[in-house]
Amino acid sequence: MRSPRGIFAAVVFLSLLPVAIVYQIFFENGLEIVIHFLLATGSIFIALAVFDFKTPRWMMGIMLITWAASVSTGALAVIFLLQAIALIVQNDQLIYLAFQLLGQRLESTLGLPLIFWCIAMLLTDSRGKTWVFGLFVMSAVACYQVYFYGLTYFGAAPMEELKLVLLLMFVWLLFESAKKNISRPGSNILPPVSTPQ
Figure 1 (cartoon, one colour):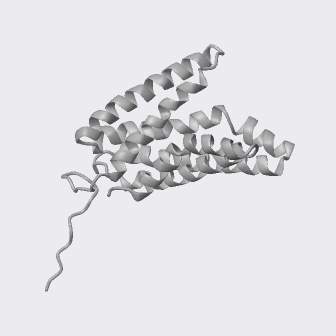
Figure 2 (tube, rainbow, N blue to C red):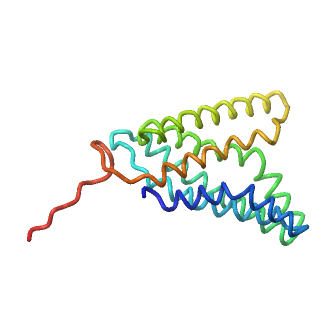
Figure 3 (cartoon, one colour):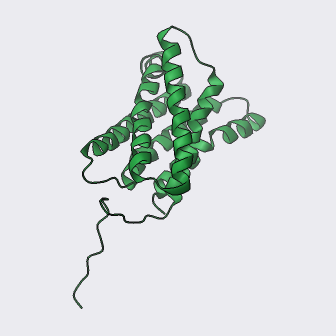
């Protein structure tokens, strides 16, 4: 498979809804803490998984996007972890820092490099049925982002349910991560070196 870390990250993000539903059945409090720990875990693995996908050597801009996606999702992991800790310790200053200063708008901004990386990876390293599915998914994600920032500009807030569109990105990433890693001309994957007998 291309990226075990990508599979794990996608599964963690896709488990958010089922975990939330099951957790609320059995427990009354603490759901936000669990959700933020899951978001932090998924973000850490995404930050590492972006390097598992190979892009053409000549596309230096793609490598910059890859690094930007890794750094930004790593920063998201720190923010989500800080938010979980703030909810556990119930410190007003920490809650203000984690949710008001670092949360909300900064979270959505830090997610943009990952979306750009997904689009770049779709255009350079995706093939077959997953490419078709990825084209549909990333078009929907791009439309959601335009809608989100358009409403934000005018001081309105989009419906929370529309964020579910972002989960489609992780469904696609799951399929891409599970594919066999095949070397193609122009990719970063080096051919095996033959050793003299």
